[in-house]
Amino acid sequence: MGLFVAIEGIDGSGKSTVIEELRKILPIYATKEPSDGPIGRLIKSWALRGGTTDPYVDALLFAADRLDHYQREIAPALGEGRVVVTERYVESSIAYQGAAGVDIKFIELINARVPAPDITVLLDIEPEKAVARVSARSGYVEKYERLEFLKAVRSIYLRRAAERGYVVLNAEEPPEAIARRIAEMIRAAANPAL
Ligand SMILES: Nc1ncnc2c1ncn2[C@@H]1O[C@H](COP(=O)(O)OP(=O)(O)OP(=O)(O)O)[C@@H](O)[C@H]1O
Ligand SMILES: [Mg+2]
Image 1 (cartoon, rainbow, N blue to C red):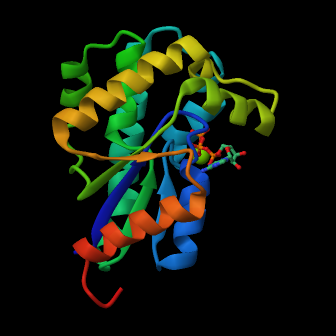
Image 2: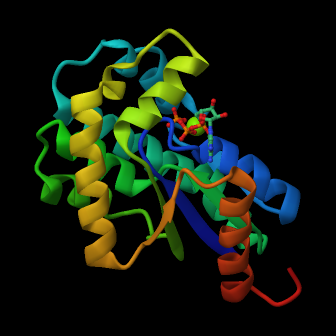
C-alpha cells in the first residue's frame, strides 16, 4: 500500500499551489475534490453555483462524490504503492457543511465508508488574507467563499486539527517552503526510497 495524504484549508489558503510545488519534489499522484467524476462535476456545475439550498443535500453529494473518488481513483493508486495527495477530503465536508449548520456526527456517519488519510495537513491562514488572494485570482465568488462563512470554517478546521493531531502549517509562508515541509513528512512516513 502507498501513502495517503490530505491537504486541507479554506479557499485561497494555497492548497493547489502547494501541491504543484510538491510535485516538483516528489513523485506523487495528485488529485482533488470535488472529483472529476459525474458526482463531482454535478457539485461544481450546480451545487456550488447556488443550485442547492439545503446544506444537508451538499453534505450528501460531497460524501457520495468522495466514496466514488476513493473507489475509482484513490484506492487503485494506493494499491500501486503510490503517494496519493488529495486537495480536500472528509475534513472539508466537516468544516464547510459543519459551518453551514449540518450536524458533524451526520457528516462523519455518511463519510464512514472511506478510510482516513495517513497524514492530514491543514494550511492555515486568516480568511481576510485568503479572500484577498482569491479575489485577485478571479472575480467570481462561490457560495462557500464568503468571509464570515470562511471564519466559521477556519475555526472548525482548527478545532478538529487540535483534537485529532493534524499538522497545521502557516499558509503565509512561501509555497516552496510549505511543500518542503510536507515532503519531509511524507518521506518520514513512506518508504525510504522516496
Ligand atoms: N503561500 C502562498 N503565498 C502567497 N500567495 C499564495 C500562496 N499560496 C497560494 N497563493 C496564491 O493564492 C491564490 C490561491 O491559491 P490556491 O488556488 O493554491 O488556493 P486553494 O487553497 O487551492 O484554493 P481553492 O480552495 O479555491 O482551490 C493563488 O493566486 C496563489 O498564487
Ligand atoms: Mg485549489
